[in-house]
Length: 518
Image (tube, rainbow, N blue to C red; front, top):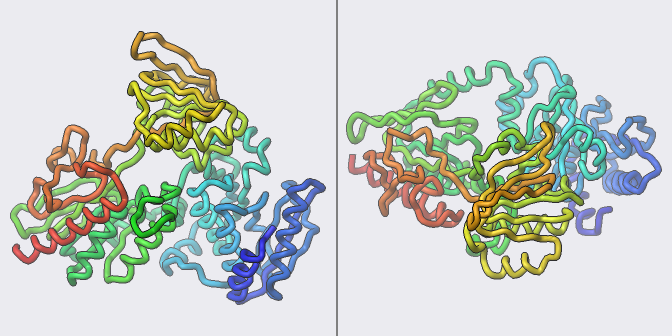
């Protein structure tokens, strides 16, 4: 299972174990069980602190538990092989069970230990899902640090019948005590906050106690990170309030146009952004969703940002970098069948539609790339584009047109998502040239039609474009003195990571200039 390179890397990691750990496998006679036995045997051979048994009797075969020898338990169980994107999750589970400290804030670890009651989690993931590892790792850590909790982490491809029976059509999918609880990417802090009764009130009290900032950055994506680094380097007291640090980059798989880096992945870049910001004395406040902007009464006064938990942050200067999110079709049935066949991440959820009929909505680069990727997994892809021509790069269009199981429909408007109450069964679209309505029978719909800025909370407080983007000048200044903006939430013409970073640096320098002049 592990090649020489992976084995060497894993051996180095296992040398950091502080306590002996035990792997207990429940196996059948199938090929996946044989692969699981091979993997566990290889892991045990790499460290004298790892032992393995193959006498487990769990109903899910193959599966295996990871626990400290000193306090053996079955609270963390992998069902199926945690390879692909989840190999890192496996490594971390081994290290954490063996006493190696996680790179998590002490207050978060204390919050986990104090979580009330207990719950049994079952989570489904796919090996190609780049959003799943964060959730897998969060549930693993909670189960290891709090004896009231358990986490069974299930590879959907191995347990396809179980996935179908439970109606899982999007990952990550988390069941809590047998009831569907969470679908989609969540950070450890977000999950703990949902489990911790009164977390919002405690967070609000802590935020209200903070002194005013000189510069407050709203949003933790590439633009916000760049702005924070630039202002912090100027010696300005800087705070960052973000719903989740990294922003939309966390949901991006391959990044190949970030100059000087030929290839990276979104979660990796997001982690690097946060690590860079944390090198300075920047107060990062995650799980902070801005709800209202109250401008200062006079230049040099304090602007206020009211958060969704009721807390208020104040600052002499504010940089808005709230980014954007995937645009919805806004047609009947879309919301009803979200996670039941309507999806927005082909890399994450594509494997769940193996051998099925799907559609991709959108003919730009994202849509065409999604259709190409899906064509290698599903039975058939219908790509639907509103315009009369596809807008993707020519090389992508050529690749798409070469695939035998793809149908391309242009000048078509999706009008409704159809379903049977439990899952998607098809869609209807209008031929815009004739007005005729057509029906396509299918099981999955992937929406890839661009972005919408996260600025609804700013309406009436600041000048916005007709598209809802924050209007800025060449220095990133908005219609409010002392308030600047950067990134995908603004009128900058191109929504790219590298452009957002440059815009964030511009806004940071502009905020510094504003500070010294006022």
